[in-house]
Amino acid sequence: MATKAALGMELNLSAMKKDLQTIRTLCRQRYLRHCSKWCGEMLMALQDVNEDPQEPVGAAPPPEPAEAAELETVELAHDYLTLGELDRAAHQSRHCTGGRGRFLHLYSRYLAAERRRAEDAPEPLAPAPRTKCVELTELRAELQPLCESPAGGDGDGFISYLYGVVLRRLELRAPAVRALTDAVRRQPLLWQAWLELAALVTDREMLARLQLPDNWMCQLFFAQVFLDLQLNSEALAIYRAFQEAGLQRSSYLSAQIAIGYQNMREVDQAIELFQNLLKEDPCRLENMDSYSNLLYVKGMQVELCSLAHNLSNINKYSVETCCVIGNYYSLKNHHEKAILYFQRALRLNANYLSAWTLLGHEYLELKNTNAAIQCYRQAIDVNRLDYRAWYGLGQMYEILKMPLYCQYYYKQAHQLRPNDSRMLMAMGESYEKLDKLQEAKRCYWKAHSIGDIEGVALLRLAKLFERLCEPMRAAAAYADYIRDSEGQDIWDRDEQAQAYRFMANHFLLRGQLDETAHHAARCTEFPETREEGKAILREVAQRRAEEAAARGGEAAGATGATSATATAAGTAATAGPSETPLGMSPLPPYRLLFSP
Image (cartoon, rainbow, N blue to C red; front, side, top):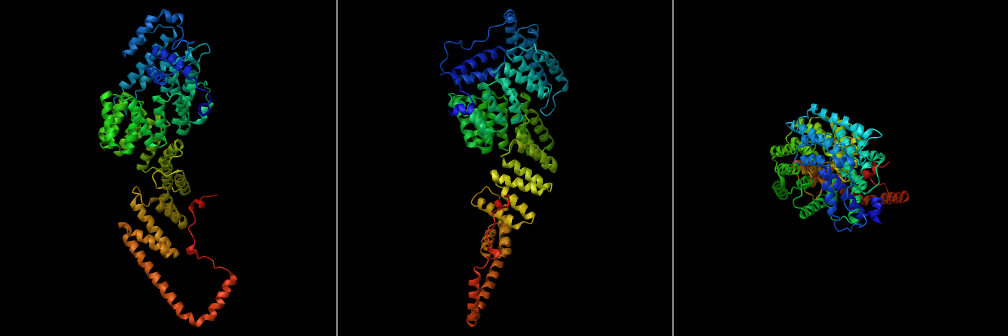
């Protein structure tokens, strides 16, 4: 079956439903709200699946003796957590020794430390105070013996998950990967641990080296990593396989597929999926910032305004709402207001990647290079796989006229998006500024080969050939550029005019007067080349008159030279057909000139 081929395993929906119910109970007990919500949404897609009557549904493992003795203490600490009294919850559970109570104590301390760090940062662009990292360092020291000692560990993976999160916040990536890998081995159904681990995978080789449990959640982890690595076709194949197996109603899968289409620049399909999600769940906030990015790209101001109003009525202080409103103001060119809303989103969540990138874009519009560079660097700190931040840094250093720096950042963006022609075009332009013309030529050619989004690869290639004094190749590239651009309004008319001017002069030098006249006539359609086009047409008319006069003289002398003509004709017949003049030879395809 196609589903089994894509997932590498058979999907048992009944067992999957039981797994989700069990892990949701465990996450609720430990105040892991996002994981509990995700499980609930997945269970909504499985509500019609028959349950196995032989198995207890949603039952958590029986409590340890220590947990039973401290149940009231743990429940009270959980209530404090629910009310946001983090330090009080940590104090209440400080003597707990059972798995749940110990996790709530450590998790409360982690949340309290993160909240203090956020509160002490007055501005989004201000760095977090380094002194507050002491709390996380102390927490790491307590977690380390529980997770790394041979006899330690909590068995269900929750402590290992928290240890990995703390290590990641301390920017200790390699130990964090080990801790989170250990967490998913101990608790293969803990989706938050899978997500944290996915954020640390930098390439496909690293993914292959991970020793992971083989279950259905691991397949969703692979799909998430593929999306982050821009391997969108592989990710979509996995998500579609889950849908075909019986999860068609899953809002999570639909949203992930929409993001995959967005990465592949299939904007209309992605917008349609997000619109369907909003019809099913009109109060949804998750992924709405991605939806607003698509509306921004399409220039759909009315739809973006409606989305901003709806989200503001639902929760005006969510990060998604702030990003959507910021996009709306950006589309209206109110960049100062957009910056205020993106900054508000970062005050709510300093690790929100989309807000950092969009804030950098706004500062780029205002030519505030220092602030834009800082925003893009913060975005890279949050997620090094964000190609938009690398590309934005390249643009900043291009504005600062530092081509060596911008070439480095464009190269990083290209490695993340190897099939995006915009990255290749940017690399080619930076290579040109560094006088690395052969490298620039390869970039422009590859950008054209994979599908030029902006439609300027052929033009840049032609100008580069012209600069390298290779007129035949330049003419071939200009000819294809003109053919592709005719009848389309998206092309730059100034560049079109220069292309016609070059072609007219090129054919004039080669003596091909018909082609010269055609391109010169097109030159007269553009104000900047009109006079030159008229001059070329006059030159063509003069040459044609001279040729006509020469042919008239030859006809007058033909009567007295019949025998000589017959002799010449016999000689020509013996020698065979004459060689085609160089001026009439067809243009060589520049594609062949790049072949080995």
